[in-house]
Image 1: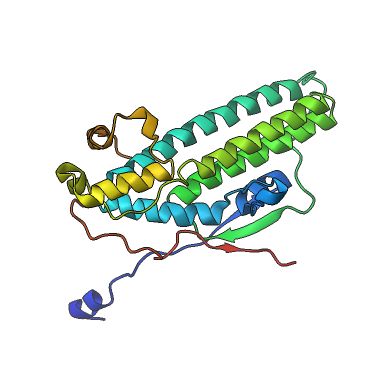
Image 2: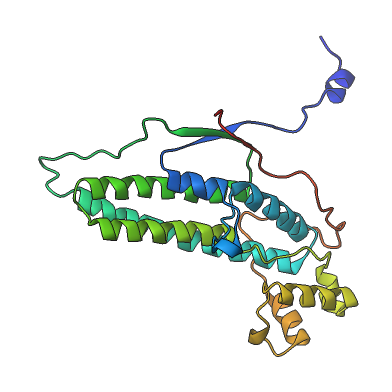
Length: 259
């Protein structure tokens, strides 16, 4: 039997695990994988799960190091998550109502792909938040296509709803893309240091801070110092913590299916 000292030296290490997601529509798969933009061809970028979680990793760590702008970004994302989730659920109820016409004699089940795509993921925190909405969008897309095929909603209305739902998920993935890491901490804002000024200038330039809503630097500082709401899924803040190291471990990796 091992001694107490041996047990102490062989303590459990960090937890690890696997996750996977199965999608049935190319609409949801595109939202997950993303797409490169091409301004010359008028093609907008779609921020997929991988770049989203990589960016959220930086924001999460910055918020943990007491960056008030990063915490504000997490709260902004959570509010947007709630709005998008509620919108998708409303549309699902609307389509489901159309699909239950003559339900006493006609039963319509949600269709599934004959060859769904299953991807193995390593995702945590806000990556799963986005993944939940992509899966909900996948279900909605299945229901819309089913309703169109069964003449429960018109082709025009169905296509318009698919476009709207796709845009909602894309907006969710990009709602905090304008945040940039500056190394600023709450104490910098309190003392109004040069780093605080540089951070405000940088975040104003990227439009994370909408300058027209404020009278100037002092007004911006006062506003962000006055925000006392913490992100529900955010980190425990470490006041005066070590600055974030960019390029650290990412939250998500995506294994592409064979072929």
